[in-house]
Amino acid sequence: MPRGYRTAPLGSLSVPGPLYSLRVLRVGFTAPGPEGSVRADGSVSLLWGGPLTVLVDTGGPWLRPHL
Image 1 (cartoon, helix red, strand yellow):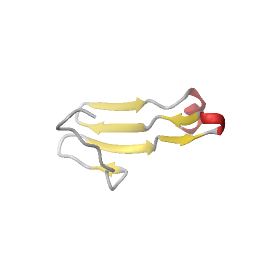
Image 2 (cartoon, helix red, strand yellow):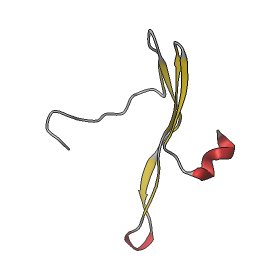
Image 3 (cartoon, rainbow, N blue to C red):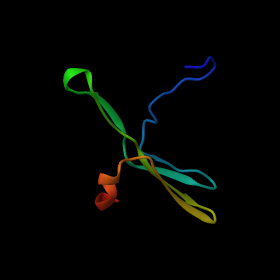
């Protein structure tokens, strides 16, 4: 990780803000699989407020019915 950066859990799946608010709809994960493989999926978040509503979908196509 580059110097000067760090990551930490949000502590909440919802972050209200004065202009925009964020809600994590589905939390991403990584997990070890068999024979050294890795299972993973990206997070899906909703950003709303102001003039825009944005769905940030880095999850897989199999999540479509859940969204």
